[in-house]
Length: 245
Image (cartoon, rainbow, N blue to C red; front, side, top):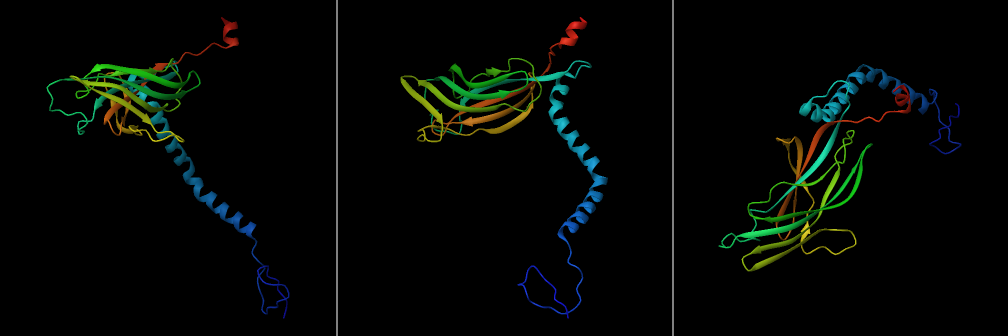
């Protein structure tokens, strides 16, 4: 009979029998990791290549499909943002049984954060959409666009934070004052709701992603269309290049 010490038991407890040496955890981990490495080695390269191709196609398909990349000229993109405003047709906020036409002038304030190697923009942009029929909707109007062509860096962050103005119907005037909710402030009486994506596609202007923002009480709809436009990057000459010239 011999005494075998088990860390999980109290000291001084004897057990009988012949036992194999305790298996070391470090050794087990090494064996398992070596087996996993051998198994994945035959799959790692194709998997990584597939992921790279998928993400590369997603990021580059838009510029190349729209204009075709020119050999020797680095390709970039520019973003351009447009808005249309209308009344929700399913809403009873603006009654349709009236002889007098509706006329609206609204301000849409959009918070934009767009950063890249070549450009940086962060701020609130106010767009006035004037003298339109809210039942039929306004024409597309430019809100903002990149100052210059830049490397692909994903979509800018865009949030509609205010919609305000007047809607007139004969002698009747409706005040619109909708706000995006903010932490620490009371909920607005007419709230600008979070946006949702409604469409992606291509039109005569280019590739776009379209989102919709609605106001809770006044039931107005602001559709934002973000265009992804291909362009040629302008590369600054380095000191070496300038010396050669």
